[in-house]
Structure formats: structure tokens, C-alpha cells
Length: 295
Ligand code: GLU
Image 1 (cartoon, rainbow, N blue to C red):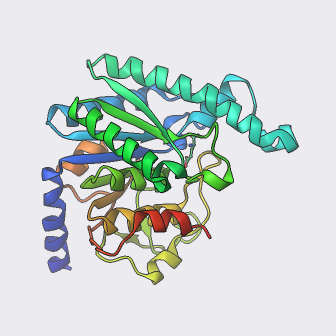
Image 2: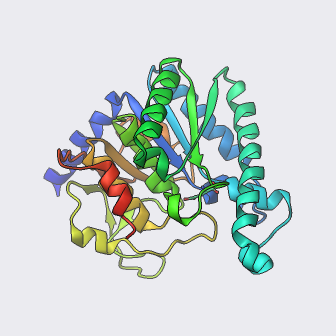
């Protein structure tokens, strides 16, 4: 136990030196559960944390969900599937178009308070799978980061349907990390990390502090269910993200979004959330992985 703790401390200490960080936040972390409206205080804290990372000279990318949730709210739809039956895909895509603009408006306002320039990048599976698209996306990210801009990324939900969607922002954030060769991915979630079982159902579920190697047994543990009724990510998608991130040689942390200031505490090397060690696999092929992972 003592050895384990000293090893954890050693691994965590390297977070201080990270240079290129992707941070993902989910829909349920951005809105008030009672009303579904945006939680401005949390967004403000998030923005301040990210600007502070920029001030330390680090490259920062934000992957933010919440477009569909914000759009739905704007046009007063409670349940897209129930209220719109066979039109539900078009309605969802319309909501994404409305909500993405709203979301960006709010982010830009908040980032502007710190003189931080932001950019919007919307992606689909094709952005990765198509060589020319991937090449362009890579160059754009690289240029934005060189300019000191914080790119804000989401799936292009307005045009993406089943065939060309990545499907969830956990995976998307890992794909972005791979595309820009990030050295750290942080997933902020409504659950504070990885457990041996679903802690909402099993009170003997144990918290896992560190994952050195992702094996099939661990993937099995990832439950397909998600605790919230917004967003799409459960533990399973987080483990898929972990496989991508660690496979390309980045560390990853899953942590609770209850207090967004957890970002600088993680960067300080504190033992928060679940830490997945970079486990670079030279044979890991992102494009192949993306093309086949939900077959
Ligand atoms: N892209 C979706 C949105 O912005 C969310 C997907 C997810 O949360 O995984 O509404």
C-alpha cells in the first residue's frame, strides 16, 4: 500500500510538466439539473481554469458538449424522442444548430473577460477517416495553438448521423488528443473516476486510483449505462477514450466535475480522479480504430 502510494505520487508529479492538454466537459456538468439551463458559475470557473493554464504557456483545447441540450432548452422541447417521433433526428440536428451557437456565445463572453481568443471546431468521423480532412484539421489546430487560441470542439451534430458520427464526446476528445499529439487528456464527468462496479448500484464498488494497463477485464467493467439523461457518455466510452489516449502516448485523468477547480489541483499532481498511464502502442492505428470501434 505504501509502495503503491509512492508510485502514484511519482506518476502524478509528471502532470506538472504537461504541455498540450485536452479537457472534455459533458452536458450534465454544464447545466443545472433542476432546469436544464446553463450553469454560468461553473462555466465561468471552467473558463478561468483554462485561461490560467494558457497563462502558464500550455496549449489548451476544450471539448464541450451541451449543444443539443442548450438548443432543446431554447425551443422548449423536453423530450425530443417522445415529442417528435419520426422527425426526431432532424429535430435533434436543428437543436444542435441552435444550441451550438448559444453555447459558443456564452463561452466567448466568458473567455473575453480574460482576453482569451477562442475558435470553434466541429468534427465528424470523416474529419479523421478522410485523409485530406484530417490533414486540414491537423493544420488548423496546430496553427490555432501556435496563435495562443483555445479551440472549442464539439461533434458536428447538425450534419452527423449514425454513419459519420463519432457518437460521443469522450471518444471525440481522445481523437482530438491523438490528432494534435496532446500529452494529457482530462475528462470531467458527473462521476469522480473509475470504480470496480457502478457505485450507484453497488455500495461495495471500489475506487481505482491508477490504471497502468487497460486490458479486456477492465473494458468489461465499463458499464454501458450513464447516470444522467443528457449527454451520451457512460464509463464504457471513457474507457474507449482511455484506450485511444494512452495508446497514442498521452496520460489521461477521469475526474468529477462537481468542483471545476479540480483542474488545477490535478495539474498540481494531487491524487484526484482516476489516472490512466500513457502506454504507447506503436501499432495503434487511430483511423482503423475509429472505423471499427462500434462495429
Ligand atoms: N455532441 C453532443 C452535444 O453537444 C453531446 C455528445 C456527448 O455528450 O457525448 O450536445
